[in-house]
Image 1 (cartoon, rainbow, N blue to C red):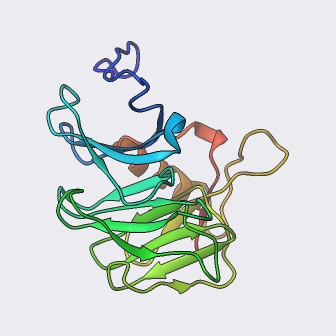
Image 2 (tube, helix red, strand yellow):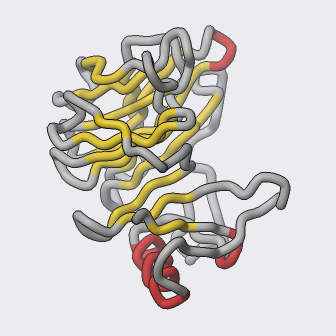
Length: 212
């Protein structure tokens, strides 16, 4: 954690044999943070870890699969989605009681299991699953594949119509800033919004592509 704009950092939680991998950090507010975690030495047992006092204390909640979770999205303290791309035990799961119980919402049959989940609000959301990109309008109960879109490493919507996804350019080592439609002003605006929410945007090393 840093309280000096990144100039100095101190350890908030040690990665021990209890939690050997931390895949995703979600900041709900300055005190409430969530982590998608797993134990790599014990069959990739997945966990959600939560703090409500800025990282002083943490609680862990297991989810009903041995897959290592790759991403999570937190709507509020009760409603959370978490996903894992493992072919045999992955899928998309949702809790409505803060992680005490989980319900399977999606498992890959015609697509791969999801590796990225993003909810614009309580009803509308998107997820990346292998080479597929899907949308829900009923809180994840049903998903529809969006044709012409592919696998993305991050998703962000600034309103109900305009969204951006992050992709990795194969072979270049890093990503370049570009956009399907629109231009530099839009990219700078989305970068400012992301940084305001605590997301790290590495200047021209991030490629955010606007969805048509």
